[in-house]
Every structure is written in structure tokens, then in C-alpha cells.
Length: 249
Image 1 (cartoon, helix red, strand yellow):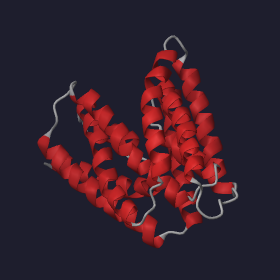
Image 2: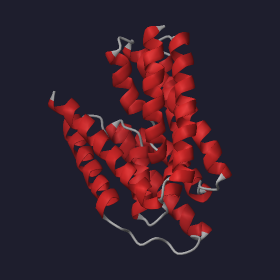
Image 3: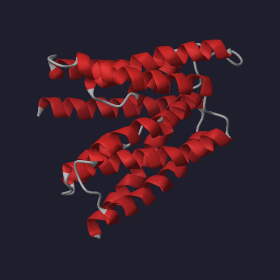
């Protein structure tokens, strides 16, 4: 029970931080779980399921605070789901290392945008038509590139929505809702390759749920718009650093 307890504590910490940014913690939790001696397929399935659990708890608070842009979220979800397999098909035969370096470049650019660029905020409520167009466009971009590179589309969605002028808090909350479904889909794929450890899932699920509640509370009630942008930027830099480390090993 020692390893599941350690995994649960680590899950709480990273989930709380990454919920603020609207990005699932699986990309960090998977290598951490593997380092703790957990089978890779069990680690991947568990971490992806934890993403869904965390974002369900976070999205409940975001919905109560009216932060989710439904006219953006639904088109992103539908279009991204449809185009992700297309991206995966196009990736066949392409040099994966080159693609990942391009993605690292995008992450560094997006992080710089979050930390230093001040987009003009949209005044008032964006029309439903424009929200739908934004959702379709971002969904196509995130779905295709996510499938092409084999990475989570949430990494693309948040910075692009902020670049389009949406409130960073709403961009993060909207992406959190989308991550519920994209992560659960990935969980179903990996769950068939490895059995789930009940003690591990139980303690990490508790840490994930509690971390999501804390992260969502900080994002909605304690952090200002610019602070959320800074956290998103730092998280993107962390993702880029981890990918560079993996590519150079």
C-alpha cells in the first residue's frame, strides 16, 4: 500500500496545479507511476482515467460559475474527435522525432504568448455564431495535430483560445470539460492492455478528485486572469521541457 499512497499524494499535487491550467495531469503522472515500478499499461490506463475523474469534479465547479463556453466546447469536442484519426493516419511514415520537435516549438511559442503577449480581450459576450466557428476551427486544429503527434489536444486548445481573445479562465474551464471525454477514450484503449490495480486506482482517484476540487477553487475564487495565464504558460514550458528531455535521451 506504500506505493499507491505515494502515487495518491503525487496525484493530488499535480492535479491541483494542472486543473488551473485546464490540462490533464496524465502526461506527468504516467512517467511518475512507471518510475514507482507500476506496469506501463496500468500506468497509462490509470492516469488517463484519473484525468477524466479530475475534470469531472473540476467541471462541476466551472459549470456552477458559468465558465464553460458550451458553443465552443461542443464543436471542439465533435470536430477534434473526428479529425484525430485523420491526423494519426497522416502520421504514418512521417518522422515522429521531427513532428515532436515541431510540437515542442509550438509549446514554447504558446508559452511565450501566455507569459508575455497581451491579446485584446473580447468586449462583452461573443456571439453564438462566432463561438461555434471558433470551436470548429480550434477543434480541427487540435484534433488533427493531436492525432498527428499522439499528444493531448488540450495542450493546443487553451493557448489558441486565449490567443483568440477569450478569457483565460473560460478557455481553461472549457478545455477541462473537453478533456473528460478525450481522456476517457484513451483510457478505454489502454485498459484492454493491462489490468487495473484497485488499491492504486482507489488512492489516486481520491487524490485526483481532491486535487481537482482544490485547483478549480483556486482558479475560480483566488486567482486573477493574468495569474491564470502565467500558470498556463509555466505548465506549457514544463510540458516542452519534458518532451525535450525524452527526445534527447
